[in-house]
Length: 335
Image 1 (cartoon, one colour):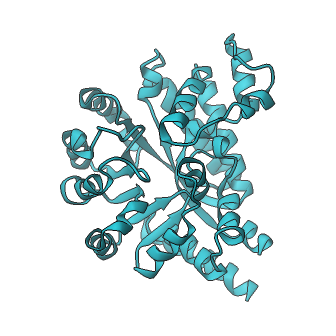
Image 2 (cartoon, helix red, strand yellow):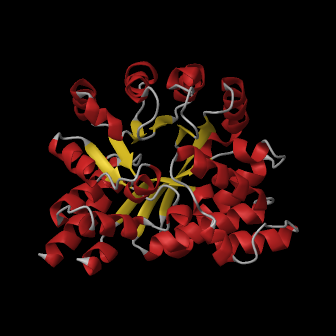
């Protein structure tokens, strides 16, 4: 089963590029940019990853980004992730990035997106890996900042497939950003929002995401299972849910495998993703393997979760059919 998972064609729809910053690269960029890190070695930095919920994770996450300074840093960050993902047979990925986390400390938007784009192009030409980019707004910053970021991004709209919403959810409901997402939709961008696990007013937030923002996809969304009416809407609309099992095991002490099984049983298009793999020490294959080994999911359930990733991805029908045919051929060859 390990070999089957390793070789299975995959898509990843929920990965934060800033969350792929491995300790070795962090040290290399810090040395290049003359930044002192409060750790002697990459191993010491890794040992300092002490988080048990969303706020404690975010505190470490944002502090680590300061080593990202120029275009080549964003290229190196993205290229390292894309090589790793492709080695695990991820053929298609939709990548989150957080421009406000960089522009707020003086790094130009153009610097960020140019570096990322150059790595995307290199992955396409050298690895045969297809990617698209999702701009995320930081929900613990103001709606005005998000709107300014969207307007700054519009000249680069051709490089984006959609916009998202991440960071600390507490007291930052989806409706806070309604005008920003309405403008993004009129500009032809797809919409997704994080509904993190076990957050304050989570069912209210999921309701806003569905009824007011009218997203095209939901990131995480595990708590929707607490309300049959929400589950029914999500299933009827065919909305994808980008669940991150190993991330959940860190942040809520639950792999959420039983939740994934329930979603599949209800006809909800749940998917599996790595979220911030450098911090949670698990890329796509490790997440799928954990569901099989620790979560008790069957191989058929694993295949359905991977199939859902292609079904809810923001690609053309032609490309979707191409990837699904590859997946079917892999399953049939193993039968």
